[in-house]
Length: 345
Ligand code: KG4
Ligand code: ZN
Image 1 (spheres, helix red, strand yellow):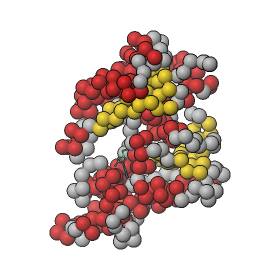
Image 2 (cartoon, protein in one colour):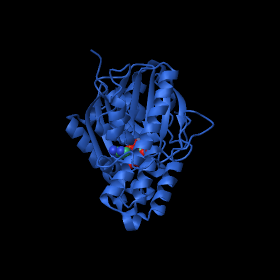
Image 3 (cartoon, helix red, strand yellow):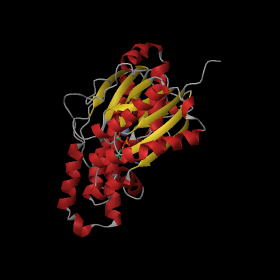
Image 4 (spheres, protein in one colour):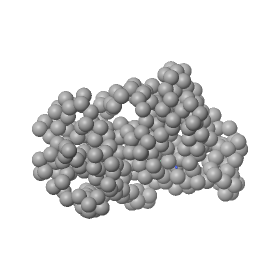
């Protein structure tokens, strides 16, 4: 039997410091530290994120190895997020990972964070079949992708302005609900009436698959102003606004994904990224299971940023024959540089 592939993976692109250990594509440990310090500022402060990653990364690595029951010397592949994200934050994880790989004299694989969200669905026992439509909905990204094979993607649509998660965060902030807004709105929406108010979602003329979420954010702002929200606010009003806003976002995501699935004749659909933790979004899409479609949503722990998804993406990158060339080019023998754009998606 050939040697097991033991991966040590790092994710530090934003405000989660995460380290995972995988054996042959199975997660043995996935330690995630959400940096709470940012809560004082209502959003992520890049410099603080970098410093917190630096402060914690070594001890989280030890913790991940210990939980996995692996010695560092058993690791034969190291991976880290290299793009996109906060550049200082990425550099901490990337350099820590590359030094570890160099010290162990094992290959290093750099991973695109958006690809990692996409392939997080492969962490489940039940895996999607190619081709599939991937919806990636996070705090920084909203994409609909046609995935023909591993690392063979066609971006069908993306957002012209705010990402879906960003819209959740901004709307929650407007109502003084705290950060991150997604989980709070999700919880409150359960108690609210989705038909309370119709918040419009802008339609873009240029592409049927592109999104725009800044209009709905503005329409919530005007609704709050025009209805004297500060004077009239009550739990019921907040819950109803949350439910109506959330419903509008989910309907747009759903309609566009289904349009793509029909146009491309695809039955398997993956939903991933932080917003895929949303309970109503999960319910809406999961209802399609057994009705001609197969829906794949990662387990809760793999929806928001985590190193498990970096590890699984590195695993497929490493084991997929056609990526060998990429590995040679990008491995430590040359250098893996953090990129600022999406050229590598
Ligand atoms: O994937 P992620 O951890 O980070 C990025 O790569 O951006 O996503 C974070 C985003 C935040 O905007 C957060 O509000 C949103 O995911 N989110 C949710 C839920 N949980 C997290 N949005 C809606 N419903 C949720 N339950
Ligand atoms: Zn993410």
